[in-house]
Every structure is written in C-alpha cells, then in structure tokens.
Length: 388
Ligand SMILES: Cc1cc2nc3c(=O)[nH]c(=O)nc-3n(C[C@H](O)[C@H](O)[C@H](O)COP(=O)(O)OP(=O)(O)OC[C@H]3O[C@@H](n4cnc5c(N)ncnc54)[C@H](O)[C@@H]3O)c2cc1C
Image (tube, rainbow, N blue to C red; front, side, top):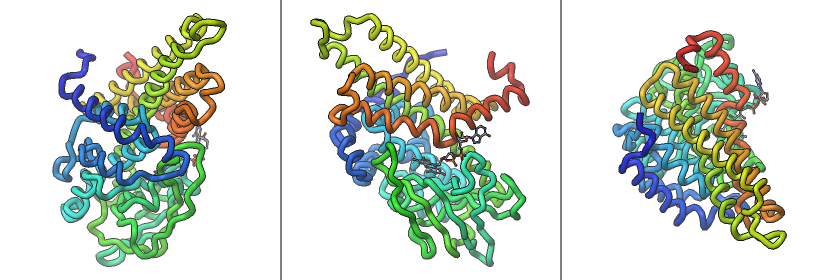
C-alpha cells in the first residue's frame, strides 16, 4: 500500500494549483460579492481538461481515476470552493452523459461538455422531493418517437447558465418508486423550459441556483440515458463520484483556510508576541491539521474504492462525504476564529471559505442521509468486511 502520489499525480496537482492561483484566487472574492458566474474561466479550466476529468475518452474526457480528479479539485477549491463545486457538478453530469447516452447524443454533446465550451446541470431534487429523491414527480411520457416532460426541479446548480440538463423523471406510474425513474439529456433552451429567480444564498455565490419548470417539453426518445427505469441507479452512481467531489471541495477549502491561519499566526502580535506563541492556539492548529489530513485520506480511500469497483464503494463515498464536509467546515470556522475580528470581515477570505463550505453538509445528500446509508449497510449488509 503506497500513500504517496506518483510523479504524474503531482504534475496534475501542480498544474491545478497554478491555474487556481492565476485564474481563481484573484477573482473569487469579487465573483462571490457580485454573484458572477465565471463562465469564461470555467472554459479556460476546460482547456486543461478539468471539465471532463473522469468522463470517458469516447466523449472527449480524460477518463482519469477518481483519485486523480480529487487532486485537481482540491487545489482549485483551496482558492474558490464555489466555482470549483460547480466544475465538479459539471464533471459528474458529463460523466453520466458520456457513460449512458446513445451514440447520437454523445457525438452531439460529449466534446462540447468535456472541453467546457458547453455546461451541464444535474437535475434530481424537486420542491417536494429532497432527501426522499425516489418520490420525485416530474413525468416523462413516451409519445411516439419523443418524450413529453412535465414537472419542476428545485435548487439546480448552474440553472439558467448551462446548456444541457441531466434530468431524472418518472416514466413509470405514480407508485413505481425508484424503479419507475429514468434519466434524460435535455437541451436547456427547449420550448416549455422556464427558469425561476436566482436564489439568494449564504454562499456558493459564483454559481446560480434556480428552480426549473417543464411544461410539455419535447425531446427525442434517443435522449434517454441507459434504459427506462434505470434513472435512479444512474443518478446514484453519479452521486457516488459527486460525494467524493464535494468532500474534496471541503478538504480544499479547509486547506486554503488552514494555510491562511498558519501565516497569520506569525504575523499577528498580541501581548507583545506573535499569537503563534500561545499554546492554546498551537493546539487548535494541530487539531485542525489532524482533522484535515484524516478527511483527505478518507476521501482518497473512497475514491480508490470507486476506481476499483469495490462492492462497498458507495458506503465509503457516504462516509467520506459526511466526515470531510463536517471536518472541512470545522477547520474553516476555526481558521476564522484564529483571525479574530479580521476573520469576520470580507477583506480576508475566511468568511467566504466558511460560507461556501457550509452547504457541502447539505447537498448531494445531507449528512443525515449519509448516516442513513452507512448505518443501513452496517446493519443489513456484510458490515464486518467494511469496518475491518
Ligand atoms: C446551493 C444548493 C445547490 C444544490 N444543487 C443541486 C443540484 O444541482 N441538483 C440537485 O438535484 N439538487 C441540488 N440541491 C438540492 C440538495 O441536494 C437538497 O437540498 C438536499 O438533498 C436536501 O433536500 P431538502 O433540501 O429537500 O431537505 P429535506 O429532505 O427536506 O431535509 C430536511 C432535514 O431533514 C433531514 N432528513 C430528511 N430525511 C431524513 C431521514 N430519513 N433521517 C434523518 N434526517 C432526515 C435532512 O437531513 C435535513 O436536515 C442543491 C441544494 C442547495 C442548497
């Protein structure tokens, strides 16, 4: 077992760090304050392959292991968790399309999405179906060679600024549960699609979040992803990787905050000496670093399980998401505390990092739902294997 990164992985991380320093760090506070979606910068990230990191090569992606993708996302998130989180959602939706789309749809959209010139949203949540996503009501009715879509999605990241929607909708009858859900690729500008107001949020301000309504929207039948009834499985497979990605964004945000705090402790003097000399604060810093390293290793373990196709990969993805997003928020909050009043003002990045990291405990399955997934596996599955 080798915990060290190889030369190629170090090179990925270094190029992501250089991009983050040049293209994200100087602008992140402005995008946050003005709620600007930096589409051109995301396209530049696409030129480096960051918009299709693990999407299949057949769709123009780099088809990298998930572990390698985390190295890139972590470096980007240390500068700007909000923009990076959108890039990870785009990667997830692009992987889903690249993996399950028909050849026609993959040929039409694959290259555009993996290059970052076109962007994708992931549409599962509905106003009445959040944690209980399998109760979703948006319908897709087969009519001849088309599907007719009616319903609404809530909290959709990128909505109104993206080009294609990976949409989960019900093709079975009302009581069909998860097995009655199918996934579709829906061009975002079709007649009958309308977008709600941009939600005003605590963080994640560099990406829009909106409700999307579908009123008799027609798509060709070949825009179905996989087969009818496979949509919930496809959505959950997307989220396994998505949870690693969001966990990684928390690790990155925490690393960004910790680095700031380390520097600041040497610069800031109180009682005639640097605050770095106070043992209470040294202990705080030590705990932050320990939690951060534990979170990073757990995320990489979950990514390695997913890469290996391990049976318990989904459980590890849930554990990594729960642990890293809780730890990441804690580290950001403690780093803010170490800055005293300066941590609370916008001139410093701490309050932004903390606000951006907070939502990671809520989305892509709340941390309560992560515990539901883990406990179910422990009590119903072959738990001893998992926890050994
Ligand atoms: C900024 C933002 C961006 C988002 N982006 C997207 C996106 O791009 N695509 C998308 O599809 N969705 C997106 N979401 C939606 C997100 O995934 C949901 O908000 C999340 O799954 C929770 O659903 P909910 O908000 O309806 O909360 P609810 O499900 O109503 O939960 C309310 C509370 O009850 C708890 N709870 C619910 N059920 C249980 C249970 N069985 N046991 C214990 N506790 C439980 C929850 O943990 C939570 O604390 C986004 C959300 C936000 C805030």
